[in-house]
Length: 467
Image 1 (cartoon, rainbow, N blue to C red):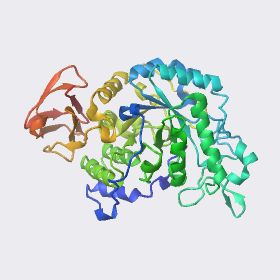
Image 2 (image 1 turned 180 degrees about the vertical axis):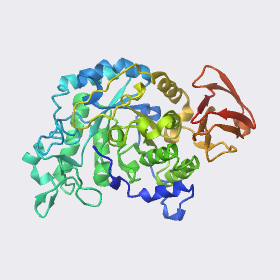
Image 3 (image 1 turned 180 degrees about the horizontal axis):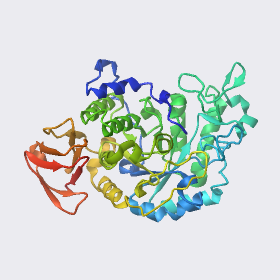
Image 4 (image 1 turned 90 degrees about the vertical axis):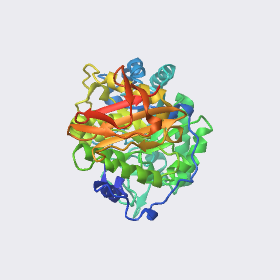
């Protein structure tokens, strides 16, 4: 959505246990979904790197053609999935700013004329597919613009309080400040049919590969159980939920969800409010809370974070690179926000035209290295496809986060200094980790030994691969 609100986190209190690196006070109260089932997913999604594209700001043109021109560069960067922010016309009634929020949809079947037309979108997707890049659309099912086509033609689709239409509601049934939007009522069977048909339309007409679903938890989960088979009947989909507090999403519709807690914990570590052991506590919680084989989307920037909270440097400072390394090597899917490969120092305006001021793409090689190891070492595949994260003991576990992941003989070793201090570190890897590895960021070989000693600069990182 266009703003990051506190009510995204009904489980926010669970973050406070990480401050003291303690386990939940009542672990039995956390439901264990380890035996829950998992949906099928496209084969290509198991080691994918996502790239979020803010079409309005991506190029000086601010249209599909501007994105299309960059596809060869994105392919070379290592991008597998291009996520297009909402492409629909934006409502004018109660519009915010000059151009409005892309998340205030006026017509689910139409295209924002600022971006181009249907043929332009089809050409973008076709070219992306030729480059080996899949395309997912941002979908906004919880609300529409006040002057939406459905508001005019199907007012019965909308929520009413005391007989009056209402702005989008949060999960507690309370109005939000998204006052440029009107809430949809999923108690209406005809709305459900219409929403599914609209989603199917874009698969049929543009051959899209999936959806990133905005505010997925504000829509009843039984609706998502209807959606998934209906979409897969057209084409197998990749489904991403912008929600973290509904484990059942993994059993009804979604292949991945948002790692909001990961974002909060990593930012706190970067700013000295938590330490490296908080990641252990977080991982324990996530493994208990979600079904076996789950995975999340991890990011240090997205459109909400960039606009409303700050740039990567604002939020992470000199720790940005080390947390991007963690993002690519932890257990989920990494995502880049457009401009990160250029060291984006802008907070892009949300309701106005504010093109990225591209420079020299100076972070390209850094991200290429991470994309390459993500693609080529099976240990880093997502969820049950990859290797389980196993910590490597050190003499400074509160500041050094060292771990390995291994599957089928393919292994990575990751060593991160999550502190602003120089650290002389002793690692104690298990016998099966000992051996020669390739340094992902340097064409050299590193020998992992028992009682391995390293001198690490502040926020330093080392990623080793055995293939």
